Image (cartoon, rainbow, N blue to C red):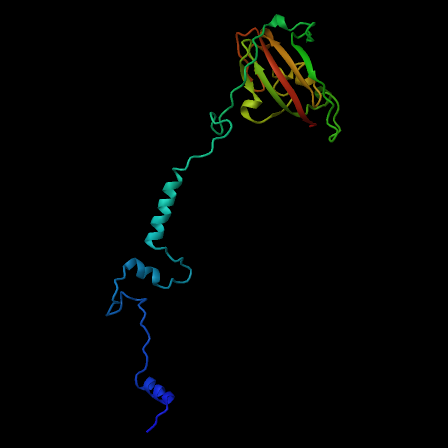
Length: 234
């Protein structure tokens, strides 16, 4: 008797149904574990995470992250241009030629005031056009706030205070603390954009401060190079 092959296949499938391959997501609770060994860490990773709880990474991933973190410490960093100075430390002040009080003469372009302070203008200031400020500092009442760049030296040519060392300009209100910078011929007589140098003799600098820095004592004179960056009226 001839039997259709299609019916034979259908009947065979009905007699011996195909069984699906079992899954073992809960291998710890299954009586018959799978043929291959499954570690507890793998079972923990195969469990479905609960709502609101982040799924933990396997141990191998944690070890890999720890290894990469340890290797990153061995990578050398790129040195900055000032590699000898750490971040936050003061930069060294470049020295100048040594000087004496007798060097600052009128023939060299210096002007001496009645107080004993000596000064000369290196670059004239044009004022601040955006702010409409063209007058000298002492013109404004009450005294204004100014921002300056300065470097101060002792007679041996070494600097003892500088905004270049601190990496930022110095802002303050003039005439309040009565420092050496508030003397006539110093910052009080400057215009925005001007750069000048003034020399303070020992008698004028005795037990006083310069930009809140104690003036070195037992020095014949102090040389200050200052530039007026900005002025803001009170």
